[in-house]
Structures are given as C-alpha cells and as structure tokens.
Length: 168
Image (cartoon, rainbow, N blue to C red; front, top):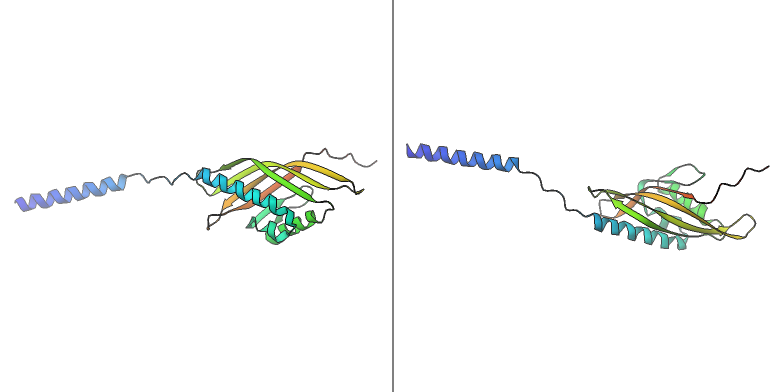
C-alpha cells in the first residue's frame, strides 16, 4: 500500500512540476536597442563618407536587396541596380559633394527594424556653372540582416529650398 501512495505522490509531484514549467512566462529577448542604434549611426556615417568615392555600387551596398530609394521629382527606384542608377545620376552632377547626418535614430524593441532621420548638405553647380548648396532632410528605414548588419529598406529625401516659380 505504501508503494501505491509513493507512486501516486511521485506522479503528483511530476504533474505539478510539468504544470509549473508550462505556466512559466518566456523570457524577453535582451534589449539591444542602444547597440543597434549605434550600429545604424555608424553605418550612416560610413555611408556619408563613402559618397566621396562617387561609386554607385558602394552606395547600393548600403541597401537591402529589395530596398527602395524615393528621390525628389523622380520615380521610386527599387533593387540595387535601380538604386545604383539613382546614385550614378547624382554623382554626374557637376560639383557634386554630399554630407548627411542623422539627428534621430530609433530601433523597435523587437530589434529587427529601425529608422533614422536627419539632414543633408548637397553641393553642386547650378545650370550656369555657379556653385550652389542645397540643404534638406531625409528619413531612412533600416532592417537588421541575418548577419547582424543593418541595411536601408526605404530611403527618402527632399530639399529645404523653395520651389522655383513656374516659367512665364
């Protein structure tokens, strides 16, 4: 009889242990947002610096395979080849020089997506060949890649300069 009670007691203990484990809450993933935000800031700083190379392929490397750039006064360019063409066209501007920097970077708690916003300064020559400076702003949506790096999935920018009046 004692054996029966011992067996029942063991079964009850095992059942209680299984129930307790089954009710345990999953542990949240570690919060890596600060490190991820720093990684995006670094990627963006490298990207800005790399514009001096004027190599479209180097610029396209900062984008996800399915990434898009939404330049002003032009259609959306999706995919690295189309994005490279947008950068080629910008690099072809006489007097081209570009610097951009984020003022805000945020990463979702999930740690797989984030965004940056900031400003840029673009130097180029106007149609008469005179140097001019355009300032503007941008928003870039970033996606964490399987290797832990961050790539742009959407990049949009536009000028702060007033729209010129229509020709008379």
